[in-house]
Length: 63
Image 1 (spheres, rainbow, N blue to C red):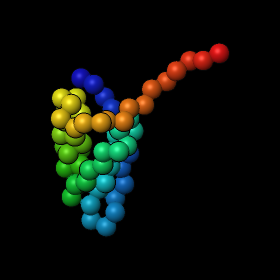
Image 2: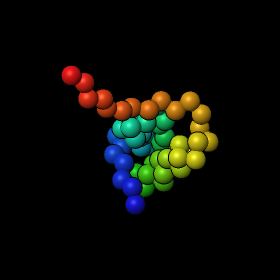
Image 3: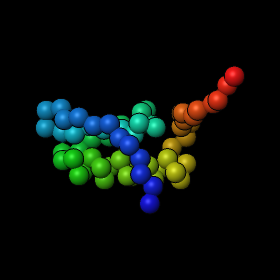
Image 4: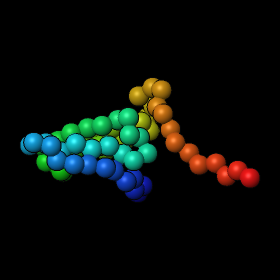
């Protein structure tokens, strides 16, 4: 099982969050558990390349 870090906060009556690695793809839920489920769905779309033009982040050693 893979583990990804995500950022989240509560605004009014909903939870909003996104993966650190994919900050362009945000989701929300009425509960924290619903937000997590929605983020899992987004991740499956990213992995299956259902979402196009995904901006990715990497590291590069130089010098």
